[in-house]
Length: 140
Image (cartoon, rainbow, N blue to C red; front, side, top):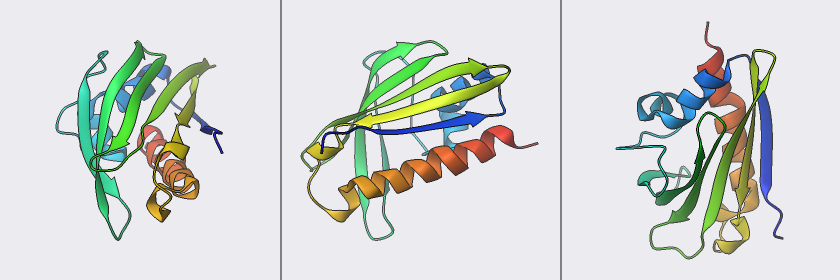
């Protein structure tokens, strides 16, 4: 199954605020992962730890595309595990609100284990994009 996972959400926030949320490490730790360092620059490499309740994994990432205020892509792989994927965040202005489309390709390249199953990514991204980021951006 080589179908990318795609999730879209519209936030009651301007594009600039959403862009800052997905590119500023201090803002990212509020809703995403706590990164030691992050720069939205082509070739920049970063890592973080995340996973299931049972096991944590070191995620290894490298920025592959940046269109300021509109698009951010990075690789996504795991230390000591085969497979490589790519995550793309795309932002679209919609009358003062922002539509975010997240596309995660290459999921089928990971080992056939529960933590790497498509359903795990679907649940994770739905929580991260659908709940965590929404709550962060729309706090009054």
